[in-house]
Length: 460
Image (cartoon, rainbow, N blue to C red; front, side, top):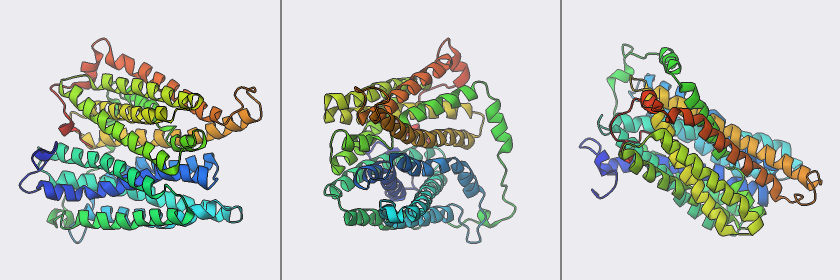
């Protein structure tokens, strides 16, 4: 298997077969991500008739929990266990939460779609989404940390990078399989698909964890140093232009995320696409993200500026949302597929660029904290963006259909179009915020990076 792009991530103590087996937990996370951010939002809005604003808020709940990943990772770093494991307990707790959330989710959604059981459905749905989201974050955070522990020091970035790419590959395959299974939609089929995903989550993660983490006396010992991270957080915030970078990350992430709960419903409601056809949009997005990683790796491997790469990602996003925006008046489903691919491309370029810049800020230490800050801002803004997208779409559509914007705009696509225009404006704002960090030679002082960066060095 030396032909694989990440074959050099393996070592004598962590052969590639064992690393690929560990990567199965990323497949389960990718599968759940496709369900939450892709398939279910279209099914709830189009087939089950749930209000878009409620769907957006439900989907945003797991993302709003994501800032806790910093604490989860820190706790797994400093965990004391009588059996000598520090990562496995957190991974298995996360797996249990993810399994439980997926197990009750289809029944909660069915209750949500019926007027007489709507209040109970809301409570059950909130519980299902919170359980699933918390499980995803805990499993992924501790799992990536376990991969870092198992890999040799010089192999760690490559090992973690392989796991991240496996997440995207898992998302693509899950989107294709679930799309095929839900092509002829029925509530019974929905229950079967989601509960199969729950069972598969437990099975995959059990196989992934089997004999991976050895028992350690240091984990048991009270003498093992377990330092706090408050001082490192202050030092991180004291770096020049850190606030500007975090603002750019927040604006860009919100710009890319407002459509997360709307793209598949847009294809189904406005363009008349089937469940299977709209689910494949998530697969196109994931493929575009992989392409974005590959292009970013090639450019950064030649020493290109990561912040400039993030700006290119924002430009790709602006073009993508313009394509999606014109798909409705042109009645061109092919255009929305191209737009979904371009959105993924922009996300890949933007994510890699801002992540590399965040890592550069931690060049004197504290890489975990820098990545935690990057993830916390990104996840929080993604959750807020998704929720805002649903609310804006519902309000604008209702106002337009009531002839508040004139006869020309009194169509259901007006709400979606408003969100896509706002996303374009947010990405334009991202470029404006990033500009001063890129120009006038300031980026070298800000980043302090030397040498090349390739996909094999992608840290998380």
